[in-house]
Image 1 (cartoon, rainbow, N blue to C red):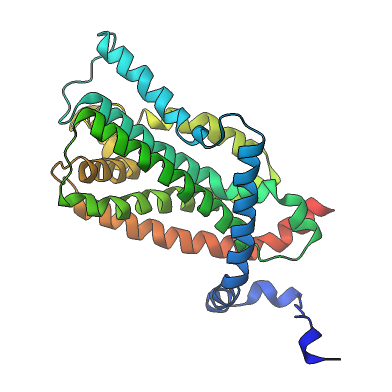
Image 2: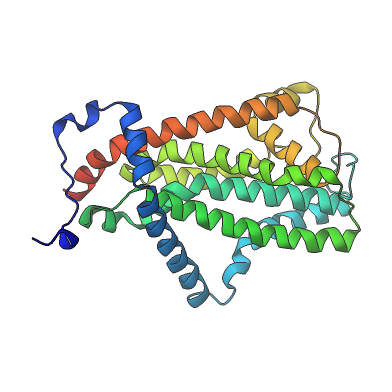
Length: 286
């Protein structure tokens, strides 16, 4: 047989689950170019489908946070709800908060959504499964760019000043994405077996938003203040919003700790995903 026409042969055995974490990580790194190609093609397909099957297209990336922010701006302006004073104009405060929360929500849903959408492909074709995760990440990043463009317009409209601290906004957003993606990736294997996981996330995430200082300033005392100290997203979101709106940093040490913790959780969740996927595919394909 001509060497150029030889195909790569992958052998699966019962000993696969006994391999070390290092060997799994080495395989992920080796398959990364192929996974990237698959993820990028799926990402382009999804974006094109969004344009083709929707009149509003990519504007759906900004509608949910805009509608949520508009509701709370109206309630506060009508004196129905009072959250105290904010360091920046409240429309800027709540729009930035809802945009960042939407990025987190999309990140936590991305791995499960991408894998379940392509479940038939997983069953029929041997593909680098990490490519599905990458397609979800690419969609989150694409939607993030749309939100940042909208925030530029909002800042100009309200005359919101920015400072050199804006250079830390991108690392802050990446920390939020890592947090959401790590949690979503942990739930993905179970979510492939039970649809309750995806439905439950859709119900729980809006509730969790109200336990995070998205629409109101972070309280420092009381029961809610204690919850904020235990809520990692409270720190990640507040510090990123502070960088974006040129406000003083409050808990940089906790921000860094949470970022590194969720990076470790992402690595751990990726190992679980890689090891469990063959068994899950066999179960859902039978």
